[in-house]
Image (tube, rainbow, N blue to C red; front, side, top):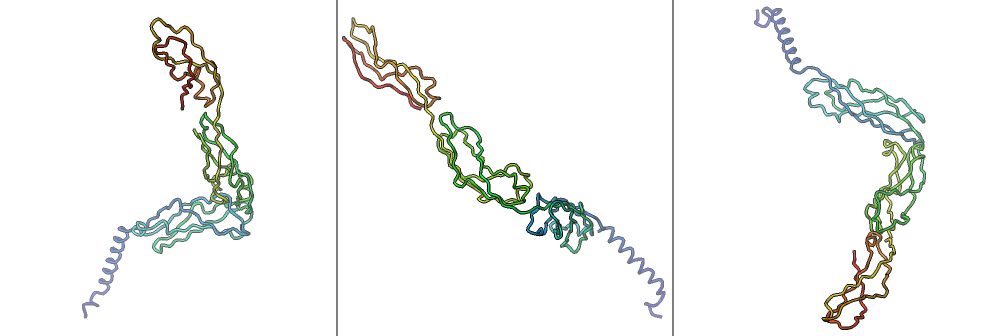
Length: 288
């Protein structure tokens, strides 16, 4: 009797026990586990009839199952969540979420939520005037004129119900501005749900705004103050000073001239004088 066939039943039982034991040990070292992948974005197919979605699709959580070793190297971008908009209608639609998995070593288990609401609307285009909003205040020296825009209207395209109330505007910062301001700004939309912004296009997206800034002047009356220098001759005194005109009009920046009460003259020399001194001198106007 050969060694192979001798006590073959006993040898078969031993082989089965050894294989089972090896399988249990391998499974214990690399068990089947599950993992949740959160914040998976949903892609949408094209809506029918050239309609557009209102708002953005939510993100979903996908559960996958596989051997622990395979899940350890699983890439979340292997998952592709999507919805099919075929057969949908205007308004709200409850659409099932489908998930494709590009990793053959991991199995897709489930997705939460399993269905999402998709709101569809007609696509529309409207033309609207741009409003200018101001931030800050120009310098007190100046006044703000009426703004000018190189193109004061924009074309807005998107969901009909959303763009109906959208108001295009630009925000112009004029804080402490002292001269004409010309800047290119991005056109923003007011009175819309921020989630709808990616679904809307604005043409042109930027416009150039010019804000005239004009210096403001103010007129006040101020007295003339004679500035004399030197000493008259011995035995003589200055007993009277006359100036003509004795009142002048000062025109300038309201902030600067607000503190002016008198305007000094240039220096008038009386050094060694023995008689009346008559001179024509300039006023010493301060600048700035």
